[in-house]
Image 1 (cartoon, rainbow, N blue to C red):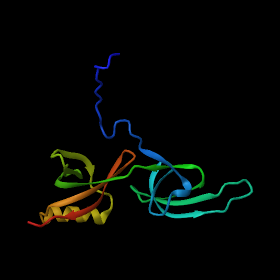
Image 2: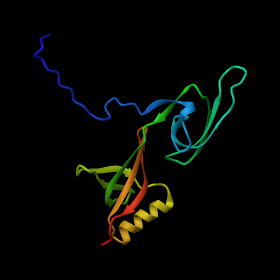
Image 3: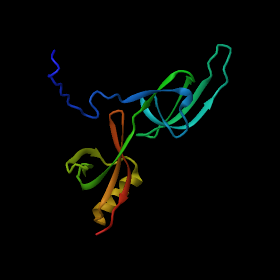
Image 4: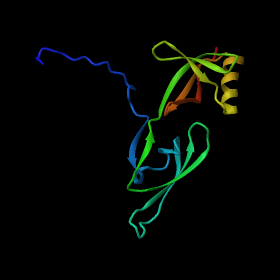
Length: 161
């Protein structure tokens, strides 16, 4: 191979990127994230037991699933690695709400994103529908994504009409 040959690689941010990364159990803190039973969770409680006769301190994690709100628990030796999900929050402007409950969002690049449903959370759902439909306000929706799932988690109003 000669020195004059150049290699060009297409780079995409998520190409081949893992949905999780390893982190030592003893370093995960409250309000962090952890994967429990293959679900991304926000840690609400961490307790560590003393090292026992066989030598491992144990971490007891209590987490709330960030998408469905279910409480999950796990016990892991503190020296072992746990999976931690890559959690992203992205803001989009709301363009439209379809009759079947899907929202049409405007991305930063100017494209539309039409694959998200209104949230199952009744108060958030009502806030979006009332603000957009009845009051005609411009709204920014915050979408949380982790491990291939996405869900609307917050709403902000940007000036009414």
